[in-house]
Image 1: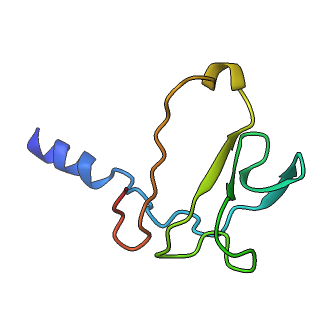
Image 2: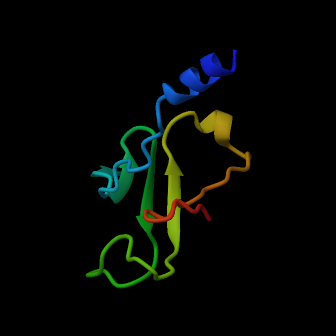
Amino acid sequence: MLVLVLLLLGCTEEKDNDGDWNLSPAFNVDNLTLHGTEGEFGVIKVNGESNELEFPAKQGRLYAVYFLNSLEELNGKKYKMTATHKENGESV
């Protein structure tokens, strides 16, 4: 029985933590250029310099998040947004 369990554990698929670390494509909604998933949600930088990267590393910025579908389901609800460090996998 122990051998069967070890065999099954050895054959399980390992999670790929590499993911897609490219900037999400930009799209326009109501004269705003958002990054995210068109029709689902988008993020826009509210402060900082206009000529800098949208998501500068190691620098705090204020972002507005737009949920573009299921507005009735989300209105008034709390949500939690996390960020994951690319190298160590830590979430904040």
